[in-house]
Image (cartoon, rainbow, N blue to C red):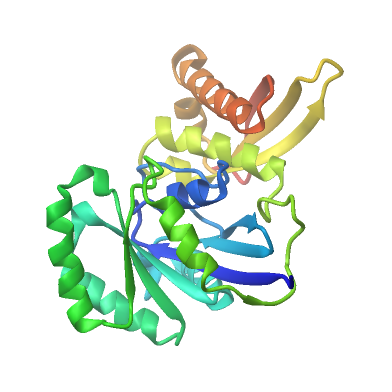
Length: 283
C-alpha cells in the first residue's frame, strides 16, 4: 500500500484550545497550554502516523493576528500564515462558549481566500449543553454549506477519534515528510525550554513573560537514568530580576518546580532542573 499524507493547520483565537488539541491529536505534550494570551509563539508541528497515513499538524499563533499590523506582533502574524500556507486543510477551532457569529463569519471569509479546505471544530463542548450547539452549526451551515462541522472537548479527549477518522479520509498519496517514530519538528531541549516558559507565564504577570528568553546550558542524561538540565532565563531589563526571583527566591523556586515536574511528566524520567537569571542589554 502506498503512503499517504495530509498537512493540517490548526487556527483559532487565542485560548480556543489549539495547543490542547494538538497534544490530544498526537497523544503527547508538544505545545504549552496557558490561559495567558500568545503562548504559542512559533509554529509547532505535531505528527501522527496511522497505518500508511501521516497527519502533520501545525499549531499556530492566535487567529487574532491574521490582519495584525503591530510591528511587535509581526512574528506572530508571519508564523500564523506560515502554518496556513504549508497546510492542505485548515481546522478552524472555535471556543463554543464564546461563539460569535459575526466574528466567525469574517474569519471564514478570510480563510477561504487561501482556497484550502476548511473544517470547523467546536471545542469545549463539555462546558455547554449539547442542544445549544446544533443551532450554531445550522446558522453557519446556512452560509457555508461546503464546510464540515465537528464538536469536541480537547481537554477531555472527547470527539478526537471521530475527527482523526475524518482527516484520514482526506489524505492524498505522497511521500512522508517525517520518520515513522517522529512526533514533532521540535527536539526535547525545545520542549524543556517551553516548559519553563510556561511556568513563567503561570506565575508572572503583565509584560514580563513576553520579555524573557530561555536558554539551555546543559541537557545531560546521568548514569542512573535521571536527566540534568541547566537553563538561563535571559532578561533585557534588570528590574525584572527581583520580580522573577521573588522574596527570598520563592518565585524562582515555584517556576523551577513546576517546570521540573512538567518535564518529568513529558519525558517520563526524573529531572533535576537548575535555573539561573541573567541579563542581556539590561537597563
